[in-house]
Structures are given as structure tokens and as C-alpha cells.
Image 1 (cartoon, rainbow, N blue to C red):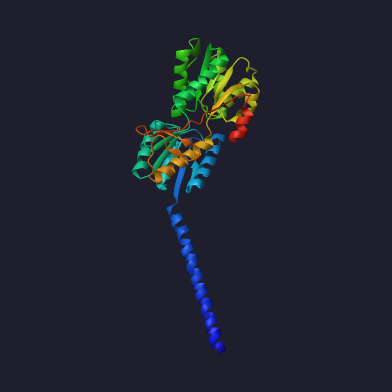
Image 2: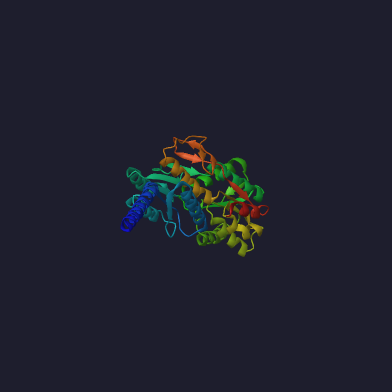
Length: 342
């Protein structure tokens, strides 16, 4: 009798253990399926280790968590399109599901992006509205408006007269040059007493380079009264040189800059006005659009980009845009930093 009770008790415990294991296995199935379904997205940026792309990576990570996509970011150690191509080739070899890209040279990158798409990889660009081989380009502003706004600010500070120069990241960086084109066209139409001293200069992605360019500009073009920097380190580098030479009352600096990075130069009156969209938002938007493509969503004007608002879609040109332009100067710099965390 006792032995029978003991045997029954052991049998019940074994059965319970088997049921528990079975329940755990069943409970684990959705997790296994979810892990198998999770996609990988690597974004190749213009240069690693600079504040702009550190912020963009924060947005990529946040978007990855929100949409269940494994995100990572890589970039060359200096501004070099050939290095970007090699990094893209690496991602094709790794068979990522989505390739994000902030291009340096649209012509150099076009062939490798064609290979990425042939391999079935979704390509999401940012700052690449004319990049061939993309699935979609995501912009947080209207490029023409962005260039014109900065020219208006520069002209206002220069009294609408005098010589100015323009800095871009590289002479092949697509969006920087599009902004520069818009700014110059606006100046020619509205400010006849202003003059572009010479062709635009590369170097606005790196502080050291833009400092050196500014020293050369001040020597070669002594009548320059304005610097327009497209590239987040251009106003910083030029501002450092202008401040150390005590030329801030003589030379106006306007451009694309991270608020916290440019705060001391803005408060000192060296950088007169800064313009920006949030690189965090840009990274997040890239992942959001990737998620829409992966889920087969119909992308058309009015679509809600989660966290970004309604978008304007130019389907023939594979362009998705939302309006997120920020403008700041001494009067609102602290407010912008608090609002954006930038």
C-alpha cells in the first residue's frame, strides 16, 4: 500500500515535470519565432566618432527597440567615399536585411548599392535625395527651404552686402551641396550687393579641416564678411578661428551646428545663428521607414511616420520628408538644448 502511494506520488511529480517542461517549451516558441523574425539593419555614416553621428546612433538604437530591429552603425575614420564603399560591401557580405546610409559621394556609391539591392537588401538613405540604388531617402526638411533660411540669416547679419564663402562636407556630399545651391540662388535673386567670393570649400565635417580652411580664407580673401557652413563642424571650426583672431564683429557665421557643441560660440556672438534637424530623429526615422518597408506598408503622402508625424512622399523620386527644422541663436539656445537634448 505504502509502496503504491509512493510510486503514484513519483509518477505525478514526473508528469508535472514533463508538463512544466512542455509548457516552457510552448511558451518559448513565440520568443524563438520572434528572434528568427527579427531583422538586422546596419547604417553606414560619413565619419565615425563625431557628435552628429553619435546622436544619430542614439536614434537608431531607440528605433530598433521600438520596431524590433537589431541596429548598428559603422563609418570610416575620416571623410573618405572609398572607405564607405568598403563598409557597404561588408554589409552585403553579412547579408543584412536593411542597409542605412548617409552618403559621401552618390556616384561612387551607386554601383555598390545596385549590388545591395540585387541581393535583396533594403536601402534607406538620409541626406541622399539623389542617391541611386536606394529604396527610400528620408529627410527631416525641405532642402531648398533649409538653404534659403540660412542665406536669409546670413544676409540679415551682413546688412545684405559684402563677400561671403560657403563650406560643405565634401564637394560630392549630396545634401550639403543642394543646400549651398539653394542659398546661392536665393542670394543672387534677392541680395545683389552680396557676392560669393569663390567656389565653395570642403571640410565642414571636421573641426580641424574647417579651422585650416578658415585660416586660408582669411589670408586669400581679406574682404570676406560672412561664412555659411553646411556640415555640423564647419561653423565650429570657422568660429574657433574667428574668435581667436577677435574678428567676430567683422565676420558673420551662420550654419548647421549642434546646439550644445556651438553654445559657447553662439553665446559669444561668434556664430550668429544655427540651423539643424535632430540627428536623433533622423536615425529613428530611418528605422521607422525600414520597418514600414519590411511590413509591406503602402507609403504615400499623409502616411504617419511613427514619432515623426505625417510625411510628404515623392514616390517617383523615392523621397519621404517631414518638417523638423530647428533654428536657434543666443535668445533660445538653452531652450533648444533642453527641448532636444542635443
